[in-house]
Image (cartoon, rainbow, N blue to C red; front, side):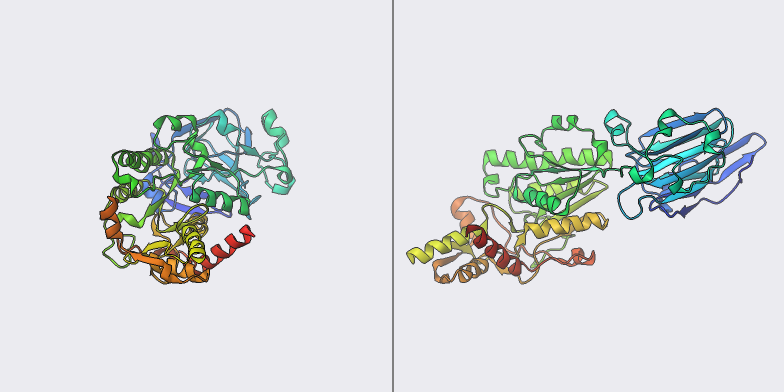
Length: 482
C-alpha cells in the first residue's frame, strides 16, 4: 500500500473557498484495511458543512490514465477513493472574485475532499482499477443536468500539470470540446422562490431584486402557488432551489376572529407553513418567514426574540404556531416585524387622505389609538435587512426588524402626518384599541408592540429611523402625484 496508515483525522482549507481536504485514519493489517470514510459528527466538528447527502455514486476506472472533467454540477459532493489513486484538479466556476481559481492534489484511500456546488471537478486515474466514490446532496435529474457548466481540461490558462500528459490519456469526446475558461459560463445560483409576490412585501422583494440585478428569482402568488395546497409542491424540482422567501400570509386581524376567517388564517398561516417547512427541511433550503409582534401579549414595553409567546387573538395564535414550526427547519430566518408600510393602502396613506379631507371640511375625520405603541416598519428597509442576513450568512434563527427611533402611538404617528400636511391635529380623535375590540367584536391587540433591535444590529445591520423614512415616503407620494 502506498498510502499512510493511522493518520489523525484533520481538515485542510484550500485557496478555493469552501473546498476542504480531509486526511482520513486508515486502519490496516495482514487482511487489508478499514476506514471511516465519512463520519458526520467528527467531520462537521472540523468544519465540513452538514450537507445532507442523498445519493452515492461510484466511478470505476479500468486503466491508468483515464481522465474525466472539468465539470461543475449543481450540488455539493464529498469525494473519496476506495481503491487506487487519482490526481485531482478543481476549478472555481462560481461567479465572484474566486472564479477561475485552481487547486490540485492527489487522493488515495487515506484522503478525501469536499467540493462545494459550482466548483468544477476533474481527476486522472494514476493506477489501474481506481475506484472513485462520491456523496452528493441532490438527486440527479435532467433538469439538474441543464445547469452543469464546464471548462476544458487542456486550457493552458489553468496551469494544471497533469501527471500523465493529456494526449496520452483516455478522455471522452465531450471533455475534448468543453470551452476554455475565458468562455466558460459561471454556475447559476440556486433558485429563490418568493411566495405571495403580489403583496406589499412581495413587491418590495421584486423591486430589490430588479434594482440589484439578482438572478434566479421566481415569483408566485396564491393563484399559481397556494402554499396551503400540498399538491402544488409536486410540480417543482426542489433540489434546484436554495431559498424560499415566504411573503404569503393572512393578515386580516379582525376577520381572523370570524368563523370563516379563523379557518382561512389557520390554513394559510399554519398549514401552508407546515408544507413550506417540510420541503425546506427535506431539501436543505433556507426558509425566510415574516413574523409579527402579535405573537406577544404586549405587556413588556419592548419585546426580545426569546420572549415566550402569549398571543391575544387568532391572528397572533397562527403566527406563533408558524414560528414554532419554522424554528424546526435547520436553515431558517424568522424576521419578526410590526406596523409594516409598503405600496398600496396602509395606515399612512389613510391618514394622508383623512388629512386632506379635514383641510377641506374643517371637521374631525380621523381616529387613531393612543394606547398602542410601537414603530413603523417600511417594507423596503425590511427587505434590505432580509438580504443582509442572507448575504452575510448570518446565524440562522429569529431576528426582530422594525424601523429604529422613538416608540410612538398610532395617534402620535397620525398627528405627525397631519402636521406634515399642515393640518390641525384637533381633527384626530385619540381612541382605544380595547374599546374598538369591544365595540366591533374584533381581535384584542397588544398595547406595547415595540421590538428590541439589538440582535439584528449585532449582525452589522442598522435599521433606518422610521420618522426619516416616513418623511421620504410622503415626499415620494407627492412627487408621484405631481
